[in-house]
Image (cartoon, rainbow, N blue to C red; front, side, top):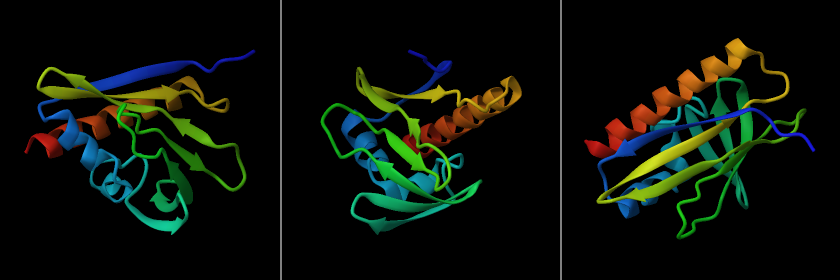
Length: 133
C-alpha cells in the first residue's frame, strides 16, 4: 500500500455555510476563484465538464451536491490517471472553513509541490474575498 504526501490548506470564511456551499457547489462559479483549476468551464455531458486549465482543455467531474460539504472534483487528463482534489466546506460557528487537501502527484518534485500549494492558497484567498464581499 502506498500513499502520497499531502498538505491540507484552509481558509476561514465569514459567510454562512449554506450560502458558501451553494456558490461553491456550482461548477460554473469555479472560474471566478479557482485559477489553478480553470479560467472557463462548460458542461460537456452527464456529470462531466470541460475546463480550460493552465495545462489546456481537461475534463472535470464534480461530486454531486450533498449535505456534508463535500466539494471534491476529479481532473481527468486523456493520457494520465485522474487527479483527485478533495475539497471540504465545514461549518465554523456562523461562518465556515474551506479546506483543500493537495495530494502530491508521483511526478512532482518539491518545488512543484510547493508552487502548487502557494497557488491553492491564492485561490482560497480569492474565494474568501469573493464570498465576504
